[in-house]
Length: 403
Image (cartoon, rainbow, N blue to C red):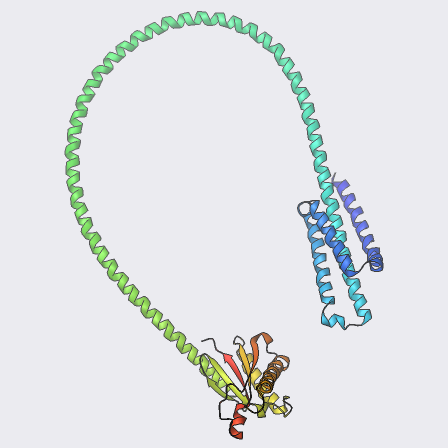
């Protein structure tokens, strides 16, 4: 049986390798990546319905793995980078997807075939078992016929034994009468013994009652002492609980103070690090550090980042990378010159320019940085003078400390 299975597996392996050799070419000529993936999905579902997940688990898992690779390759082929690939590269990606989907389909077909074969073998095994049960029933019937013949012989012997039993019962009755007489004598002696026993029991009860009274008195005294000890323990437990509560409160206060101290130290370190950014003003406010850079130091007249601005943002990028767990908000500000809509657009553009530069050239994750424009709504100086307006034209980078 093992040799037969090995031969079958060898034949399936050779057939599988042959299909791998020619199947991708045929598929490439007739199928698209999407249809090939759909065909593989249908083959895997068919294998599942055939019970391959339980009966051919390795092949079924391999088919799903090939399908997963094909789907990932298909998703990758639809990406922006793949859309700008050369025709040759696109064709190579399609061939790869067709190959992966074809392998998934072949593995699914193999799993389905093995599952169906196991099902057929199990059904054949049940048929063989039913045949064996039928043969056993015939043999049992023959044994019953032989037993019936023996039963008639046993009945004859039983009749002979019944007559012997009647004779034995007569002898037993005689013996029973003798035993009854002996039992009456034993009962008489037992009654005398019981009377003596009752007398001794009464005396024992009197002694036990006295002993119980003595023990009850001792128990009452012990209970009184135990009550005193319990009261003392309760008092000590109350005092202990009060001490523990005071200690817990002190520990909590100490932990809060420690946390505040650590937050202050961290904030001081962050302020010191931010202070190294060229041409930037730094201050701490409400759980965040605000880095302010004037627009004139960041942007050209066309609101593009200039060399000086890039140098400043390099310092900002180094600061943000030194504290990778802190998120930031870039705010663009303008003076009040011009319309509200124009100032709002300029402020948003400046904030986005800073955010995009930090992400593209300083490797700061976009997920950490938000950007917004607030226009002239938050001035820090008067807009009545050029000096004040210059201070209002700024970019603020709010780094949240989490405190």
